[in-house]
Every structure is written in structure tokens, then in C-alpha cells.
Image (cartoon, rainbow, N blue to C red):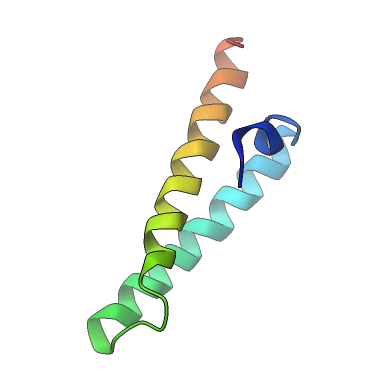
Length: 65
């Protein structure tokens, strides 16, 4: 997910996507404790997407670019 795509989303969309990714990250972390993951790089991608979402969400609340 690109930052430009996130900036085009509404605040509600960002919040819902953030909750969805947090849930997916929790599930993958839990699964990795019990068995090897099919795609371990997915965790890294999810963490980065969460960071992007939070950054853009913060930009929107503070009125930054």
C-alpha cells in the first residue's frame, strides 16, 4: 500500500484498514509461535503498512501536508 493511496482514503477508511491490519498482524504473530509461516515477509509488510497508515492519520489530524 502506497502513501498516496492512503492519503486519498477518508479517516474512517484509514481507521478500519488499520484495525484490519492489526488483527491480521496479531493472527500471524500467533501462528508463527506455533508453526512456520508460509510467507514470513508478510509480517514485515503489515508492520510497514500500519506505520504508513498511522503516519497519514497523524498528518490529517495535525493538518500537515
